Length: 134
Image (cartoon, helix red, strand yellow):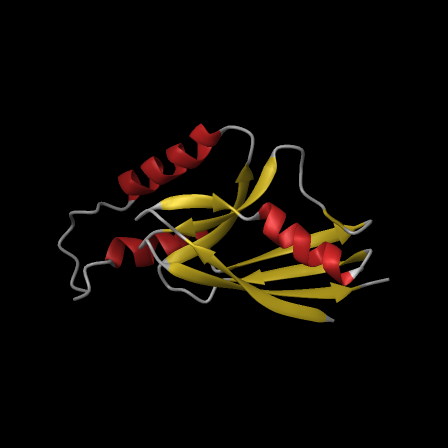
């Protein structure tokens, strides 16, 4: 088993950052050919998701859609004022599981791995673990 973490600097309040190449780099460095890659985000106002990586409008549309689902101006009780960020993070989720074959993440043609920032800008961290199955 291999594991580690990497940091992600975010520069906007809300946006989706493509971290596919960062994750693939970690997988490639292990030399594992077949396995399972786990990603975990330890932050309560950010999430992880897999979605289309070809059209940047998809990322913007996801943020716009989440803002429609979770009103930013609702009178939430949480004192820090970032309740929408907590809700959006819960909708996205904190972890992903990916298959690895021939030392490559098994993503669909159009898929990318996104770190979802909902309370930035900040410096974030992702934990990863790779379990070899070969």
